Image (cartoon, rainbow, N blue to C red):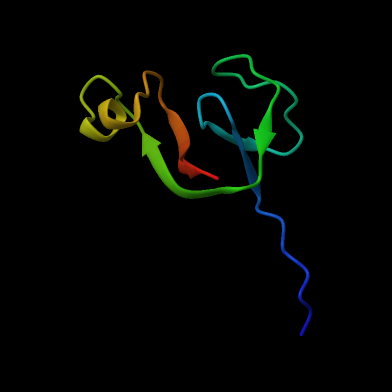
Length: 70
């Protein structure tokens, strides 16, 4: 059994926590170019205005977001 770490299928923007594919160079949500593979938990926000989770996480746009960034 290998001790190599498996890369997650998505990376998280360090500024807004939006999850994007590794091929993305610039966050489509906030424009940042800083990403991390060190994240956990996923929140899918469909309607940020009605979502209590979006309000708690400070999310204003629909999308798939990391709950925590390490």
